[in-house]
Image 1 (cartoon, helix red, strand yellow):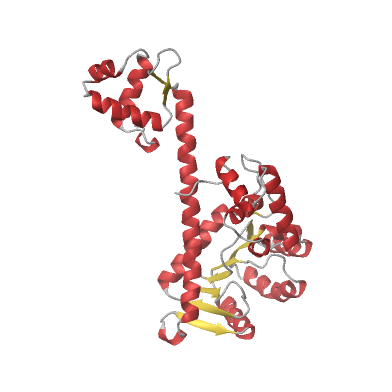
Image 2: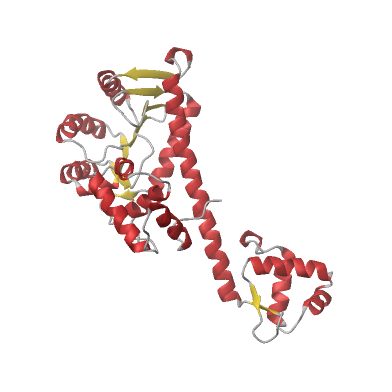
Length: 331
């Protein structure tokens, strides 16, 4: 019954006997369960690893079962931490897949790869995007990594966005959390939502992306300079993978208008993202770019986190964050 918590059948049976008969030793437990003593000892090792038994304060060398209310809470917390770590690795894998797709397309002549079209230069990118967005019939998905938008760019987008929404196109866009601090961008996002579009934000995004009707995706050739070139993908497998990436990010994103709810450690989503980047060795400039904020803001967030952790270096901050449960341990 408790296998998912790491407790096999024999270990669970031994644990139950220890709860019912605290004075039983290995021999008595083995007799009551009709087991070999060696199997009981292995079960006790398992229970010890799971912190379900402890040394007895009354009997030297003896073991006592930890009360289930406490023991099960520890096991559930451990499973939740493992689940969070697996989810984090899955999201990292999706991000890596998106970067791999873009890097491969950048290295390979477009004509030699079916379902891949390269666009070099901002003019070609904008012309192709204008054509694609006018061809959209049902749904437009977007990841926007630029942070605060320029007033000129938003005014240029407004007529096309209005046209799409008037035609009943479903629009879902994910921005960076940093747009919540920029009044013009926030006003534009509010304008979109009042007309039926859905807007959410996250601390970080892996790449800029537009997906049209789940049939065509556009991503930059390089995340370092999104204006240098882009790739138009129509291969079913690649587009499906990018749609899955979008849905994973969308599910974790916060709707515009909702406040940032700190986690159990008092960290906002942006602070949590900064901490993960710090622990990975990113500089203030790299963190700023990933979060869509200024280097000064990134430095301020990082300094505050290090102060809260009592760390004198980024490496020490990462170690302390893992020790205190702020970051999941890497498998």
